[in-house]
Structures are given as structure tokens and as C-alpha cells.
Length: 563
Image 1 (spheres, rainbow, N blue to C red):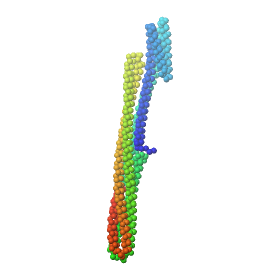
Image 2 (tube, rainbow, N blue to C red; image 1 turned 30 degrees about the vertical axis):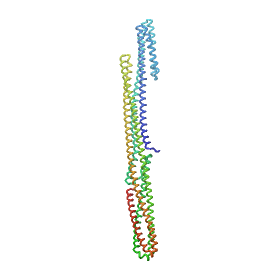
Image 3 (cartoon, rainbow, N blue to C red; image 1 turned 90 degrees about the horizontal axis):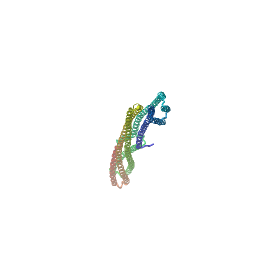
Image 4 (cartoon, one colour; image 1 turned 45 degrees about the horizontal axis):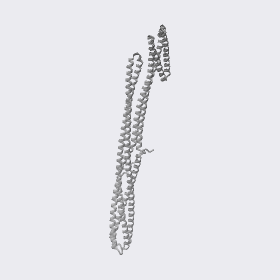
């Protein structure tokens, strides 16, 4: 599957965002769970303790009103006695509705039975009071009534202890839950850091390493070294396409240099042959001029020599035409290579645009992570609200303890409940503080992630500079190829001029042949033709020398490249 550079970077940063979002979601869920358990602990366990305490208070109120009637005989106390019993039944019914454990159900049933026994006993004693049977109800109150109330108080204490143990167990469970949440946050934070570093390392390496390789290879080519091996880049993205085009460009440059070198060597060899042939022809022409007087007697020999010279000139003309053809081929190849270099430069410019787009994407993701940091701050604000609630709960518990102290014996049980609520509030405040510290750690790690993204953006900017430098190297290569093309075109032009001159020489030798055949009647014409031929040979020699110099210059340019 082919992935672009922007897709790789976007995928890496999305992975980091998913990890951070997952951690935030888990943190929110765990905090919500702890909050629910804490609310359950306060609203359920503490409420049950309060109800049990209220049952005891109503039972004592029942006993107090009963004694009031026995002592004072006031009928108002009987009404209060009945109201206390009814209120006890209402509280007992509420307690029955919220309990689920079998042991608690058994204890409350036994407690209700004892209260009902005392209520029946009290009504019986009230009837004895109304009948003025003082001895009978006095002894019964001291024995049977006291026994029932003692059993009631014992059973109430047992139920309070049972509910208190449940409250303590719930407190321990909440404490363990908070410890587990802290440990989970720490583990997830470390994992998020490690995964973020691994993702950043591999993405940065996959981008920077091939670009550095291409930059070094471009410097080698710019210095004239074309013998380097193909760059092996496994990336299936824009950098991989750039490496493929770069390797093809280097291959085409090597082929062009080989062709130009071969053509230059051939031009040099042909020019030397042409020079030698021109010198030989000049010497022959001098001999013709020196022996004009003997031309009549050696016409046949002269004709054979002129024919040999004509054949040699034909060979020279053919070689020069071949040189011109090769020069045109080399010029065409150089132009194609220049076009390839221009395409490589265009690909580099496209890569620069793509990396600029990547840089903008990195900056956008950095802003998204900063937004996530702001969300963490909002969670911290919520945690501060929980801390304030815990402080207020602690203050309420203190006020409740003060009121319980004022109530003396009747408020003893409620004082215990207030103390437990105060402890729970302090523990909640401590847990909220620890959660706040964890949120601070997450915010710091988020800031580190932003720093890593900014570092990645810096590396992308450096990559843009490197690719831009490579583009400049391509421009230099293209200029060098254009110079070689101009030199080759000059060689081609000179070769065409030499070819035209050689054709003229061939025509002249034909004329010499005709004159030689008529040498008996035209010795002066032969001498003039010999002088013309000598001048042409000098021109050919000069042209061949210039062609040889141009071939040497072309060879010197080629030698700058190491193939």
C-alpha cells in the first residue's frame, strides 16, 4: 500500500491523539466510578447508620414517655408515647426498604420485635397504672421492662457495629480504587510517552534518511562523480518516486557522457587522419607543380595518383559526414538529458510544496494537542470543585460533631457518624489532590508531545532546505549539459564545413584528372589547378586542426565527469 508523507505524518499524530484521548476517557471513567462509589458510601452506608441511631432514639423516646406517664400520670405523655411508636415504625419501614443483606434484615427484625414487645409491655403497664396497681407494675417495670430495653440496646449496638463494619469495608474499597486509578494513570502515561516517541522516531527516520541520501548523491553528481551506485530507497511515497527519478537521471547522464566521449574520440581520430591525408595531398600537389614540364610524358602516372587522391578524399568526406551525424546524435541525447534534469528539478519543487503542506499539517496537529491540554485543565477545575465539596463536607461533619456533643448521651451515636463523615471527606480531599497531581503530569506530557511535534516541524523545514539545495544542484547540472550541447553543435557545424570543403576538393581532383588527360595541350591549366588544390589542402589542414582542438576541449569537459 502506497502512503504519502502527509498520510504517514497524519497517521502518526492521529495515533498519538487516539492514545491521549483514550487515557482521558479512561481517567474520566475511573474518576466517575470513584465518585459514584463515594456517593454510595455516603448516601447508603452512612444513611443506614443514621437510621439505626434514630431507631434507638425513638425507642428511648418511647421509654421516656412511658416512664413520664408512670411517674406523672399525664395523658399527654400517652399521646407522645404513641407518636414515638409510630415514628419508630416509619423509620423501621424506611430501613427495611433500603437494606439488602440477610444479616441486616435479621437484626432489624429482632430489633423491631423487641420494640414491639416493649410497646405491648408498656400498654399493659399503663392499664395497671390506670387501675392503681402500683406494686404490680412497679416490679414488672424493674424486671421485665428493663430486660426488654437491655436486649433492645444490645441488638441496636450489634446492628450499628454491623453497619459500621460495612462502612469501613466500603471506605477501604474506595481507598483501593483510588490507588488503582493512580497506578493506572501512571502506567498509561508511561505507555503513551513511549508510543509517542516510537512513532515520532520511525516517521522522522523514514523521511530524513532518504532525503539525506539523495542530497549526498546530488553533491557527488554536481562534483562530476557519476560512478555512484543506485540509491536504494524503500519508501513508497513521494521520496521513493524522487529517488527512482534521480537514479534514472544519473543513468541517463552516464549514457550521455559515454556517447559524447566516444564521439569526441572518434572526431579526434578522424581529424588526425584528415590532417595526414591533407599533408599527403599537399606534397603530391607540390610534386605536380615541380614536374609540370614532365606532365606530358607522365600523364598516365599523374592520372593514377590523382585518382588515388580522389578516393582518399572521398573517404575523408565520408568520415566527416559520419562525424557530423554522430555529433547530431550526441546533441539530441544531451538535449534529452537536459529535459530529464528539468523534470527532476520540477519533481524537487513538487516535493518542496508537499513538505510545506506537511509542515502546515504538523502545526495544525500541535494546536489540536494544545486544545486537549485545555480539556485537561477543565478536568482539573472539576477536580477542584470535588475538593471544595469535600472541604464543605468536612465542615458539616465538624458542625454535626458539635451538635452531637451538645446532645450529650443522645448524640453519641451521631457523633461517631459525624467523625466517619469527616474522615471520608478528608480522604476524598486527599484523593482529589492526588488526581490533580496526575492531571498535572498528563498536562506536562501533553506539552512534551507539542514540543516533539514542533521538533518534527523543524526537521521538515530542514528537509525543505535540503531538497531546495538539491534543486540548485540540478540547475548546475542542467547548465553543464547545455554547455556540452553547445560545444557538440559547434563540432557538428565545423564537421559540416569540413565536409563541404572535402567535396570541393573531390570536385577539384576530378578536374585535375581531366586536365591530366589533356596535359599535352594544357600544361598551364594543370599548374593553375595544382595551385588551387594546394590552397584547398591548406584550408582542409586548418579545418582539421580546428576540429582536433575542439575534440580535445570536448574530451576535457567529459573528463570532468567520473563515470
